[in-house]
Image (cartoon, rainbow, N blue to C red; front, top):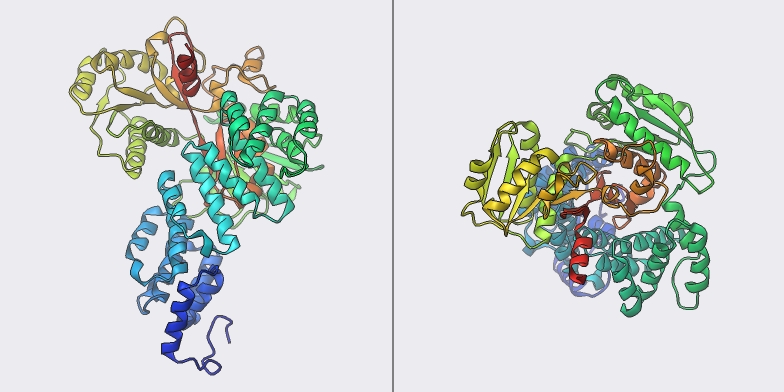
Length: 613
């Protein structure tokens, strides 16, 4: 007999008493184990159809599994029906299909849910909101959960997801507080170490003044965590100084910091490989992607040279120009002993890996698949996507309190893609319908009429500008003349990488999203842009951001399984605050830059400087 089928010959509880027992369990304050509850709720429908649906899910055929669960649900009543719907919604989330997941959740009868199912529903809704780019909605769902009724595992999942959502909402202190609560529940030593590194990394998003204030007047354990983050900040790139001060000032009675925290944090910012590790780098050497491949390769090699861990891996560079041979090239790399694979770079090549069976070694693709189903196991996707930047603009605009948006974008596929990405994200965030949008001809001699028609008299508070650096210099002054109070935000394309004192002052006040590495002109590390300015690498090169991507790719590879294991895990990368979502995609939290009349800086630093005058 299948283990999840009820043997009715051995159970003689009358139906009425069963209902009373269910009510008693529901009203009790004891923790509910989701796995045990699911087996109990689905006992009446256990059979070959359910086993087949579960097998489809286990084989990675999530979309087929979701449909199978829904087909079974049509013939049963509550609460088994609702449990099958929850399983179907979760399966759709595993494919990244948030629209189908939302549709299924809309069919769930809230009145028929058990207390445990209500908490499951909130977790699924929170995961959906995160995949949909709505971190504030995720926080609301997670904070409404009845924590005292949750099992320990569910509590840990909730806290990790909550930390991720709070971090994406630009609330690093709240995220660190959630990770601190998670630290109190974790038992495994390595899990605690990873969580504490993520906690310190999360606090690194604060300014030095904010860290000092938190270390002085923070509540509870947050004071101690802030002191550690401040020690790391003050030590700069000197690991010996950080470790020495850590041992002298941090470790003591009552402090929960892991003994290896300082060492692990330093290793995170450097290497992370084991002795004898081998990494195969799959990048194109010929064709139109060759220049991009060279920039990524230079970043990878620079990161290896700067690796102070003492365990630098062996790098093997392989030409992946032929996308049709991607799987064969990958198989050869594994056969030759690769422990990790970085690449490929082209979308077509990533699609080839994503469509196949699970990969045998962690592989970090340097682009994102175009497939709408879950990618092969062990395949992680890391992309510097313009569409993602446009979505990030919508998130930043909403966080700044704006609610009525305009969009100005150029004719052509590129402009339409970015405008569409912004519109979709703006809608998901609950923003009102766009107050207006306009398309401009990049080769036009004047934009005065286009801008005036869009901005003049519009009831709007923010404008998303899709433009290159040259076009922004022509468009932005016209926007300022038409509506001075309007906040204008662009993507990284408005910034060449180096402030031009002769031409860029006209952009003063323009915001844009970009990777932290491009804005950290004052950094002192060996891979900082300031250090590289005097080297042969052109920091204002249009492909400079791919150099930073190479740095992060090298450092992410050995951490991929650990980062994917916990939604609260976090890495402070050169290309943004990095985490891995449930689909194996690297999520980047970008910085907000702003032009002044003399330079370009992070927006928060501009605001702090202005306030101090």
